[in-house]
Image 1 (cartoon, rainbow, N blue to C red):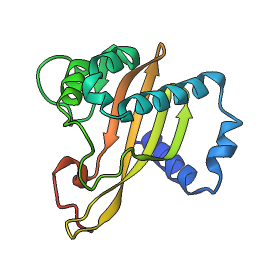
Image 2 (cartoon, rainbow, N blue to C red):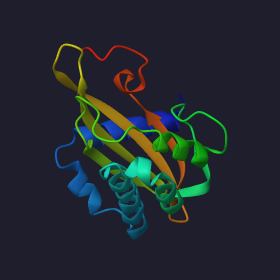
Image 3 (tube, rainbow, N blue to C red):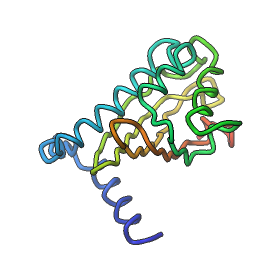
Length: 167
């Protein structure tokens, strides 16, 4: 891992562990960084509205996602560019709540640094034993011209189906 990337990870973890870190960071953000954070929050609000993601995927994407969007996640597969793959994936989400899943996810941390915004969310997922457990989801966006231009994420196996949801 390069020194730059390693430093960002350390800063991210330190910010999450500092009590009240979000409040102290807000005072040092530029107006553009606050706008970038708000863009990400508004995007998530649109996606988390009841059944909005499936019913309004295209309008949500056209409002928030750049046409030349770059997706580094393997979550959205299929034909077309990254924005079209995102739309297709959202259009295929079954309507209504998913059994055992807390909806919407809870925002744990939101941090902006220039054109980058990191959002950490948590949600409860079934643990396979009739109860739930929390999982944490890390998303990093690069903002350009008021839209989401690039995305990276770290999804737990419980959400991707890559492994058991049990603790």
